[in-house]
Length: 259
Ligand SMILES: Nc1ncnc2c1ncn2[C@@H]1O[C@H](COP(=O)(O)OP(=O)(O)O)[C@@H](O)[C@H]1O
Ligand SMILES: [Mg+2]
Image 1 (tube, protein in one colour):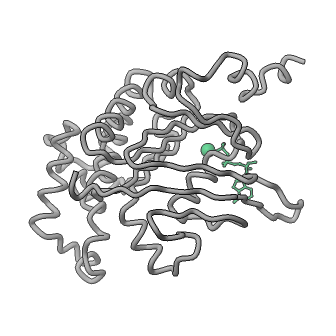
Image 2: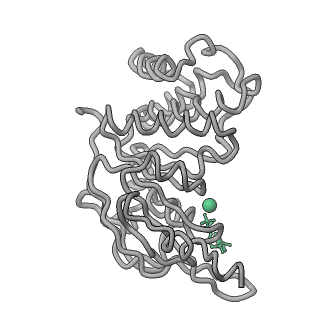
């Protein structure tokens, strides 16, 4: 597995409180979780349950109000800004809205995944190494985008854009891929394609994948492990086969909706 070196993640007593003029809101409540190497986790739950907040704490975009996120031997909630940036180079983040630079080419966008490997001045000048180009082109080939290398991103379809975003994340040679509703803007066929691609990376490269997804059928079909949040609390953690209809009703608060 070589360059795709992963590390065990230990989330301990994690809570997140957001304070606004209207008062404070507990988005995550005492979450405890271990994510071993090479896991493929789907996080489910209603809108507002805390899925995105949780994912953001895993890559240090958000510092939790309480608790720790220990990756390997390092608590990332305690890192300096600079050390955190270094950590984030090894975390591929895939967004619902793709977050690509539309006016740039497909290849340039994927090369952005290599920026963490360059000294800042080289990155600013776009002075990538031959190796960076090799890695970027290998990912484009893998995602069947080689013929689109020079196309501007804004000329692509939604499905192609999401594949570019996945190629960029993989070009980071990440230890961990976090994906926040990566298929939410795609039709069912393309959604399956995204899930298959992520499963392939997980199976073949061993990269750990944690994905927020509201489509329960996709979560059950593709993930090795399902985690459910309900109002900021972790209410289920197990294999897809262990998730009963009664649990699903509870997670999505279906009875309360009917009452
Ligand atoms: N930066 C923020 N400031 C205040 N409230 C927030 C912020 N981010 C998220 N929230 C609130 O936290 C709750 C959980 O949000 P989120 O993690 O986005 O849920 P999900 O991804 O499961 O839909 C929501 O009620 C949301 O409004
Ligand atoms: Mg969300």
